Image 1 (spheres, rainbow, N blue to C red):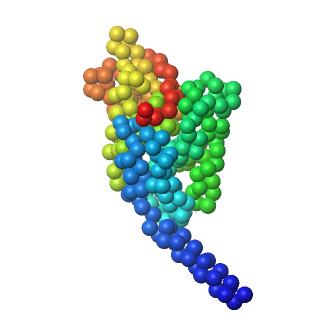
Image 2 (spheres, helix red, strand yellow):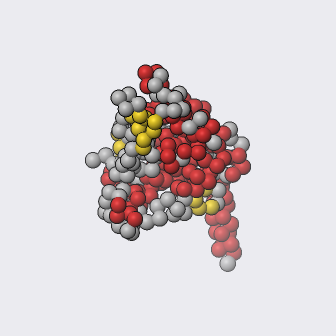
Length: 262
């Protein structure tokens, strides 16, 4: 019995030591996640097939998130907090795809309207509590709507969050980092608006065709005067010269196909 007690004390101490080590040394450079992007991402497309076979770096990054203490997180500036949530969301979107990969349809009647390999085919994908942070489990919707949108009022997050679909912004080839966040968000927004498959101004029609992201989250752009005046700051000078609050808007379709490298 004495030996069992000593063993218990040893194991408990080892657990506490490990937990504290994780908590005190959270990698805000996200080197493990960076390795995933370096090895399995090309031009915004993820090699899910290869990542499924070797997902250790992704799993270790998301495991490290579990050990982050709320007190440490609360000591960060807003840029570092936003970067954290963007990385956790994007990594978790990849993880839930891998949990169901290869996606072969299913998901119920509503899901049948989406491509067979779409993340939308995963049952309850947006509200499934599978992301462990601060001792609780969260969903992708929790991170986007209840955390990022509610707490930070930063509309450019919509061009950094990637829901594993082609219609999303392109997945950035490096993690978001607090000290680089301003430049990273600006670059992502400019790149998204420059992609004519997602946003296009047609001078012949005097119409700005926008991604439905601007419709789904329209209220987030109100402080900038609406989506057109927001976009005006990030498009080329030639396009910006034609944009005003009176510019006609039409919304494009959203491509829910998986952002998979074939």
